[in-house]
Amino acid sequence: GVKFIQIEILPEEIGHSVPVEVGLVGHAKAIVSQLLSQLETEPFSVASNSEWLKSLKETQKASMDLFSQLVSDRSAPLNYYCPLSIVNNNTPKGTIIVNEGSDTMDIGRTVLMNYEPKTRLDAGTWGTMGVGMGQAIAAALVNPNPGCVFVAGDSAFGFSGMEFEVVCRYQLPVIVVILNNNGIAPLNPDDFMDLSGTEERLTYPAKSLTPSCRYEGFATAMGATGVYVDNADDLEMAFKKAVSTVPFKPTIINCMISTTTSRGKSAAPPFAK
Image (cartoon, rainbow, N blue to C red; front, side, top):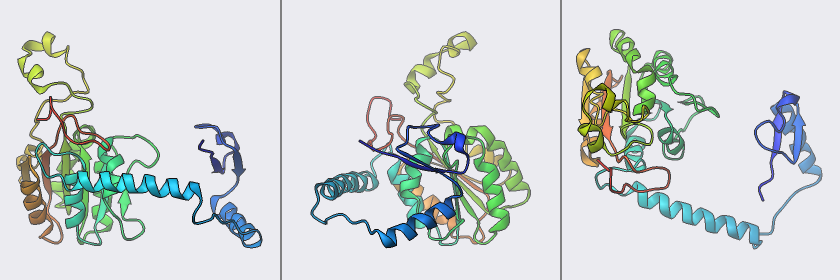
């Protein structure tokens, strides 16, 4: 029952992604101004006791109840929501947040808060991976005090993680938090460890990365701070310590989370390691 009204400056893009009820071609600012002017002459309102608003409020409450439950669940292995909330609650105001990944970015948009314009960078409407480290470097250069917190999934970090060398070389104020779930849709880590030799390892899906990969070693190899954590208390301690120095220092916090958790879902067996 969802209906879309699309504002687009390029007429050929109308209805390109999904069918639309109304297509409005033009500059977004100009069209929104026209819509607001029309609403002044023909006001639109919905009764506070309407079934539509009632259903929205019920859905909102159910979502918030689930959100609160997942955020407060500090049990190991971690879900996405708890570590993201730890980062959110302890990130100083004025920090630019860069967020990259699949679930890490999607869920991060609902947990990592921004309080000023131009203080968040991610892939936008695209599923691009590999842009995050470049964005973090740029953010640190334009916002050197306190700097940038870059929250990435392990797959996302893999696309451009070596650029952390640039961060270290120029001593840029970047703190990287990797939410490490062994890749995209990983299999049982024990199955991987039982595989021996190239031929057997090639049967393991390419998008299922090395289990418990120690990405923090990128930092320590270049003289920066690298920390491995696998529970909420250690993550909170490591992140608080990282943000206590202003401007920030080059840091990677490699946080293991469940391999079975996802959006709106708690960590669960059998592969939660």
